[in-house]
Length: 301
Image 1 (cartoon, one colour):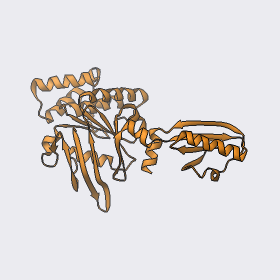
Image 2 (cartoon, helix red, strand yellow; image 1 turned 90 degrees about the vertical axis):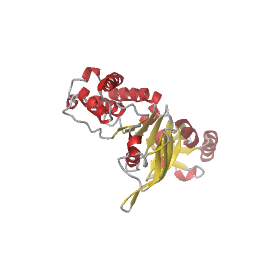
Image 3 (cartoon, one colour; image 1 turned 60 degrees about the vertical axis):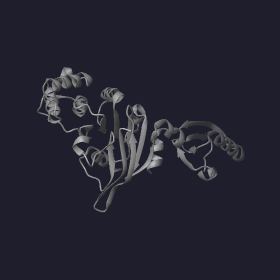
Image 4 (cartoon, rainbow, N blue to C red; image 1 turned 180 degrees about the vertical axis):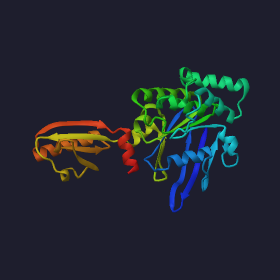
């Protein structure tokens, strides 16, 4: 594993921000690190990057302990913070040269790396503009180029697509997929669409604790349930559906109910039996598989 996080704990005063957080990330994969606001995502990312210290636990990057060799490990990590702090008065090329110099790059190696990042992130046409003149989408590209300038093996992106328009969103997603081919990428977010669009693995954190750590495919198959949508001409009572775990009224008021079931076939049989027993006039009976957003709400609530 490129990154191994083990039993991280962090407390602020009386509040435990992280409680025995453990997970790992594989090379060549994008890991979606999910959680509601305040769940502990950013705290975890900052500890991995060495900006914060944990009360206990460990972080290993390519086998090296971050606590024992923070400077060495920091060179292996590229980090794009949520608010993407940039020097707006600097020119794009100038900023990347400055950033590379901070990691010890110089001379021809620095020049070559800057050229490579300008090409990879599509910043060549903008390289002689001041960062403050760029759109948010291009500023995110500058932040990604800065995070990659020293060729890190692990890249951590904290909410990289927040505030982007649909076109910018697609461009940044494509760029993230491209950089993940030869390195480990961790995408911290609370936007489910981002995870479904580009991630292979998922970790879900809530209230400082890891709730799920699995591949996206397995998460959907193991946790996902089917939702039956029943509509009748008569008004329905939720009490009639006592054999189901979750039932609620739908968009058409008391004549439509939403039923969650882990066995769609058995669920349909029970619904049809109820229709016959209550002598109801069926208008519609549909089913749909729960998406990641519904699964996420179930886990974090």
